[in-house]
Length: 476
Image 1 (tube, rainbow, N blue to C red):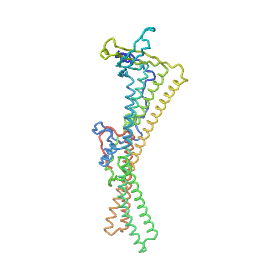
Image 2: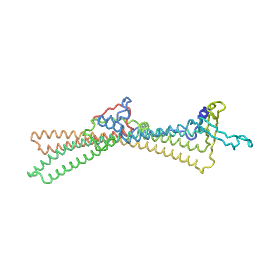
Image 3: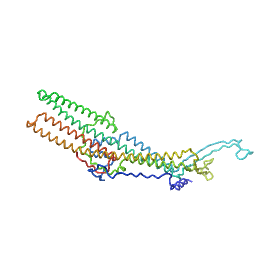
Image 4: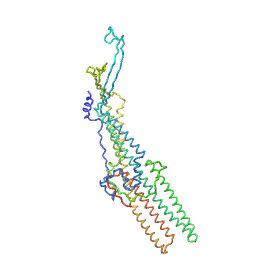
């Protein structure tokens, strides 16, 4: 008796499930990127976890902040809770594939009226008082002959896998946003330091111009123009300080720390740029969690078509089968004469539902088409983000090389003017102006370095957060 539901399940499990079987979509992706020349190939020799891609920048403050974010960020904790919910829902759906059993017992004591005949009318009857004891094991089970339950479980499992991919995507977005904010803050630190030096040089030029004006060697316009330059640089410094405060507050929020008590000392940009292998466009399908999430959503929607189509057919249910005993006395409760059992099979077929089943299938099919379109859109968006990041890195690399040359020439010019100044061949004003130009070139170079690092983060995010490869770094 107890094995009957399991035998029925085993006998029917081989039946084909109603609805289409899921097949992952074929993606026609280009074989290479537009601008991938010059990037190092990935070598599968990495010992670091893939999620620690930010270690490529070699900055301990960044590593610490990322660890704090992974441990304390409410955004990530929310995604983890939703994953737990989806996994629990998958287990709930999976439970429907097996019989449900319950154990019960009942005890009663009753008196039958002496005026009520127990056997036949016309016969006298004495008042009866009796006790009834009834322990019972009950089993219920939906026979999944069309695979409705299997499709429902398939959908729930795909939903749980989608939630896992969503959690990974939240982690990727969180760590990438934190890295971008941190590198922006470090660029602002460098610009503030350089701007302080530039202000010193500009103030020196202003003082010398004022002296020349008093001596009749410069006009009032020259002095006013230099004073305006100093004021503009001071305004830029205040803007940089304000931007730094905003990024510091953002880092506090992302890392799960209270903003009022969070402080990050001034620092420098990483000394080297990570060497970033781009891989092939098709690698995005394995790397990016948002693509994985969209694909799992498609699988879940496909399974729901089968669930909806099952409404056209009869539902077979093993009605609560039971096995137990019933007796008026405890001594006879488990004897053979006291044994009771029952089993039944129920078939239910909807005859008329005003098109409800048809609408359910249409709804599920439309849900699948929507999931397919969302998947394709996600893939296209991923390709655009990766291509844009690669193109940005390529363009910034060319610009930085040109600015490197410009900065070196400014250094040479300043060195020559210093020598001429010591020999009395150039004025202090010429020297101060050369220093101002040298520092301005260094500031532009720092801005380009910061932009390159930011573009590196964008590429890492676009490629799904790294890969298994050693982390060589290219010096700026």
